[in-house]
Every structure is written in structure tokens, then in C-alpha cells.
Length: 212
Ligand SMILES: NC(=O)c1ccc[n+]([C@@H]2O[C@H](COP(=O)([O-])OP(=O)(O)OC[C@H]3O[C@@H](n4cnc5c(N)ncnc54)[C@H](OP(=O)(O)O)[C@@H]3O)[C@@H](O)[C@H]2O)c1
Image (cartoon, rainbow, N blue to C red; front, side, top):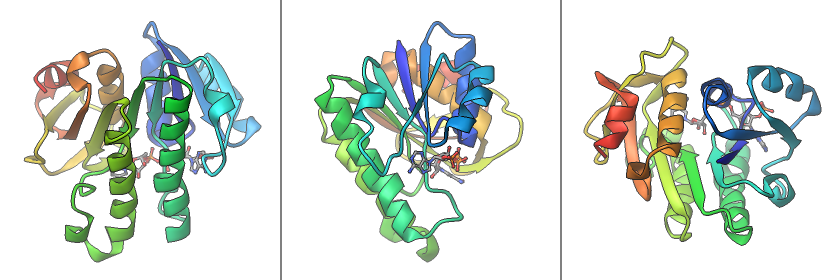
């Protein structure tokens, strides 16, 4: 498959490119700044394209089969950017994918996005943005996979996770393992039209997704 990655220069995005390098998939990494390209090509990106989620990215997506949204405005920006990137940027990309006939869309959401009002006060705006993007994707008609990781860490991945559709598990997960989950989601139909939660656990990633 031709995989379009929004947020390719991010921490999960870079792990995802490394994981994809050993796969049969072709990768198109979208970045905001051209100087980010060479490093991503070293990691295995087949193509690098420029794009900003605050604008129309349709041209950058042409010819791809699946979109993976691993972007986010990050902790150093205010609520305005959370709305513009995590919510509106994702929604615009979902609509563009649909308009361009790209049928599959995988998004990195967050634990807590199911009920933003129940989250910690300081995270509610962020969780609401994730929630709104997820709901838009669910009702888009695209084949969706919504991945809701627990707290992200930079620990080395173990390749073993706990996956649930009802948020039974809480905890942390290394970004590297989230990237492995994204790769496994690409390669299985069990992740089609599913929302699931993932934290570190004891089940190998592909086995965990096969049981969804
Ligand atoms: N922190 C947690 O514990 C936690 C838990 C669950 C889920 N998440 C979610 O996991 C996702 C990925 O996390 P991460 O740690 O890999 O994030 P990250 O390292 O901050 O990467 C985010 C990426 O998004 C890109 N980006 C931001 N604004 C953009 C825009 N306007 N247009 C295009 N790209 C844009 C950034 O580009 P630049 O490289 O140019 O800055 C960066 O590459 C995020 O959606 C986050 O909300 C986080």
C-alpha cells in the first residue's frame, strides 16, 4: 500500500517510518519544513512532501491508499493550535481523503477522548479536540482505525501490548510500540472500523490486534 503519513517528523511518526522500512509498503511522509526531509529519507521514507495541516493537503495525498494521522500540536502550543491541528487539521484531512477516494484512515487519538468531560480539567480541551476528530472519522464512511494509546513514553518498545475496545486497561506505552501497532493495523482487517485502547502488556502486537 501507499501510506501517507501526517506528522511523519514527530516521535511516533519517525518510529513508524523505521517500522515501515522493513515492510512492503511505500511511504509518503508529509513534513512542514523541507529541511526535515533528508533525515526522514534516511529512516526509510520513500517520498517526502511538504504540507501544513492548517491548510489543504489534498495535493500531497494524491495516489495514496491509506492515511495515517500521527500529528499533534504538542504540549508547547496553546489551545488554539490544539483546535487547529488535532481537531480541524484531522477533520480537513479526513474530508480530503474521502474526496480523493482514499478509503482507509488510521488516526492516533488518545485515551480519554471517549469522554472529554471526565478527563482532568487541564486536558479537557485537548481531549475534546481528539474526540471531535474521532467522531468525524467514524461518521465519514471511510474505513477507520482509531488508536487510543495510554501515556506515551520514550522507553524502548517491547513489542508487547494490552489492547481493549472498552478501555479496560490503563497505563503507559512506548511510542515505538504505538508505531508497531500502527503497522499491524495496516496489515490486518481486524482493525477495520474499530476504536481501541492500547498500553504496554504481555501480548505480541500482531496477536493482540488479531484478537480485536
Ligand atoms: N503525550 C501523550 O502521552 C499522548 C498520549 C496519547 C496520544 N497522544 C497523541 O499522539 C500523537 C503523536 O504524539 P508524538 O509524541 O509523536 O507527537 P510529536 O512528537 O509532538 O509529533 C507531532 C507531529 O505533528 C506535526 N505537526 C504539528 N502541527 C502540524 C501542522 N500544522 N501540519 C503538519 N504537521 C504538524 C509536528 O511537526 P514538526 O515536526 O514540524 O513540529 C510533529 O511532527 C499526538 O496526536 C498526541 O496528541 C499523546
